[in-house]
Image (tube, rainbow, N blue to C red; front, side):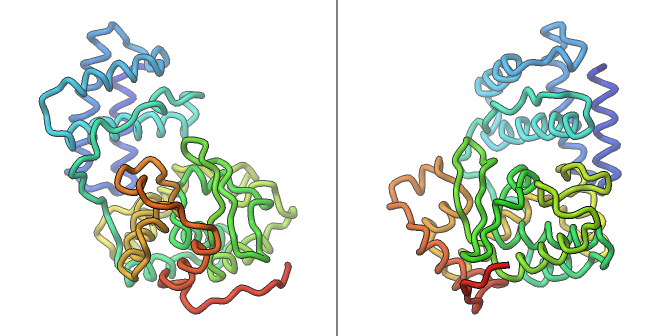
Length: 302
């Protein structure tokens, strides 16, 4: 799998998704540098890239004299590139999974949507089965702030309707957690599941072939909806995560709660705080999330 040819395909993929030209240019520059590194190691086929190679590349970047955020951008670019290759079934294993951003110091927050923009996005899907699924995906992303990989691995058994919680088993770093899910989000999940003609699968979110939904599919329909909604900002699954956290913070949620909700146990700024108990997490979520406030859970089972 030729490095240069594949990078060009990835660039066309980003263009098809509607990424801004300057964003694509950043990806191009970062991946060109990555290709030069591979050339220096006589690696011409991406199937030769191992986790050891990627960690060595990260070490090379750490010794670079560029700004920390520039280094982080380079790592994000190659990670997204390999995520794309896995999504497209070009690679079975993502060799960049072990990479971490060189520095988070003074890191700027990415795209955050306003409540108006979020609601415009949520209103875009139609009432087809795919539309119901896509609405449910967006509602869950915004209500819970879960990572896209956590969402696409959700199973029916992970939903607890009695308590209004969601069990995150496929968590980054293996940190499983139980988090609240708003009644509105759960309503849209059930509306989608009720329309599945072949019964309810193990995975909550599936494609038309009955296979688990992919990160790439979500990115495609998010880009479609943001164009329909007239939103100029780039919108990715992680945009919902940042937006959820920002809106909670703006509405008075404690940073400790947000850490617990998002599974950010490694954040230095929050490690010194006492862990929030599950009951506190649920109560804070109901009081501060703009799409959940005022909801009360009963012991009614479905």
